[in-house]
Length: 193
Image (cartoon, rainbow, N blue to C red; front, side):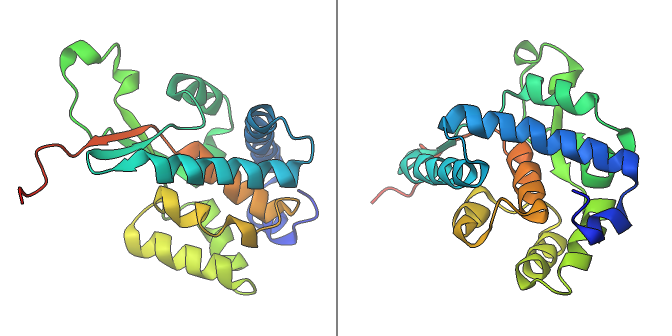
């Protein structure tokens, strides 16, 4: 990560170590799920598989997407990274869906990971946007929507990113950690014809 001057200017050495652990954690998952040894190819293959899952998950009855990580494992990992890095990237908010008391094993399950629109990572994206229009557009989109872009947004353009480049792989890691299981049932919401 030391090859990325803007990253070095934005984050401390200790914070960059946590960013490296985030990328390594996601790299391990991507390599494991794709069985591909080349990290750049593995990310593209993984995003292609998510795109197919997304396409196949949309039906007249709803929408389904399986997250790359089990929520509890992901939160256990995130609990161990530098707190300033975590807070510079994400915020935890109350989970958006309504759960019955019988479905909640603990209050830890009642949280949702959201991209912080005002943290160090957004400062980094803003700086990247000065010379890279993809990151300018991404920064503007996140600021205008108030959070992470939808599942299909990045998956549809991942081919334009070289995941051998630090900024791209860090973005992909943060993006993938933000994904969660989506299972929206639409039965009863459609108009009868």
